[in-house]
Image 1 (cartoon, rainbow, N blue to C red):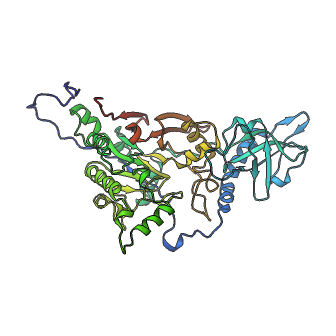
Image 2: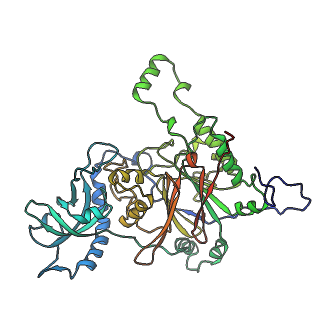
Image 3: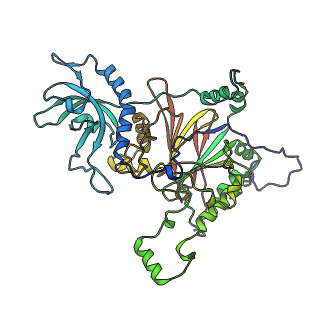
Length: 484
C-alpha cells in the first residue's frame, strides 16, 4: 500500500508553494586510458605474447622493490637468500628469489581452469624461460595467470622451484583528491595559481547512482522495473522529502549489459537456415531485433534532460567483444545521441558513451570500474566466489585484467599494456554481480579504496548510491508487488 505520510503520494492537495528543485551538478573529468587506435591504426596481426612482456617490464621493478625490502636479510641456517635476475639463473639447491609472470597451464575453455583433485601446473615466466613452481604459499594466496610476482625458495632435484614466500606489487600510488583537476587548471591558466573555488563548489555531498545489468530485451516484462527506476531518478515517484535527496544524485553510471543476452548474434547454423528459408536482398528484418536498443534509447532519452549518464558496454551489448571494449556507437541511440558531445568537442556530453574498463575523476575522486568480464574469468581459476576478494586482488596485482589475453579476449597491445593500473583509484566497482557487496581496503602508503560489487538490476532491482563526500555506498531496492 502506498504511503500517506508527509512524504507519500496519497495526500490531500497542498496549497503551500513548493520550492523548485535543481539537480546538484558534479565535477566530471573522464580519462581515456582504455581508448584504442582508430581506423587503419588498429591492427590485429601482432602477437599477443608481447602483452605479458610489456606487463612484466612495467611491474617487475615494483615487485622487486617490495621483495628486496622484505627479504634483504632473510636466511635459512647459515645460507642467505640471493636475488637472481632471470628464471634461467636459478641454481638447484641455492636459496634465491626471482620475479616473473605467474602462469597456470590452462586447458581448452571450460567452467574451471583448476581441479580439486589434480594439481595445476603453475609456472613463473620471464623473457628467458619458465620455471615450475610448487609450495604451500601458492595455495594460500589468490593467484591467476598474468600476475607479476616475486618468489623466494630453492630448486629441488626434480627441477621444481619450492616456494617459501612470495610478493605481489601491492597498491600503486593513489593521487590526492582534486590532484588531476588542479593540475589541468594550472596548465590551462599558465603560471597562475588555480582557483580553489572548484574544490569548495563540488564538496557539497552529491551522489552518483551506479546500476548494471538492465538486460533490456524488448519484452513486455521490461518496462515496469525500468519505469520505477526512471520515475525515481526524475523525482516523479516520490514525495517532497525524497525528491530533495534525489536531486543530490548528480550522475547515473550504467556498468554494462544494458541489453539482454538473448539478443546476441545467431549461431552459424541458425544463420544458414535463415538464409535458406528467406532469400532477400538488402535489409532482412528477421535477422535483427531492434527493440532492445530502441527501448534502451527511449530509457536514456527520458532521463538525459534531467541527469547526465555514463554508459559502459558489457558482454551482451552492441560493442566489440574483446577488452577493452570501445564505447557503444552513438548511432545506436537515435534520440539519446542528441545529448552527446560533438566530435570536435573536448568536453563530454550529458550522454557519455565510454570504454569497458573505464576510469574518471568525479568530484575529485578517481573512480574505476568494469562490466564484470575480468572478475568472471578470474572465478574460473579459483574456488572462491568472493567478488570483493577478486577486486582487492586486481588492485594489489596492479592489473585490471591479468588473465587477458590467455583466457580473456583482448586487443594485442604492442607499446603499452593498458590493463596495468598505474594509479590507485579511490573507488573501484564491478558490474553484473550476483549481489551487492562493499568494503574499504587500505594500503601501506595510506591508500584507501572503496570496493563495490554492483548487482544485476534485471534480477535484483537494485541500484547503488555512492556518496561523493564520504564515499559511502548504500543500496536502493525496487520491488514489484505481486498479488499472487
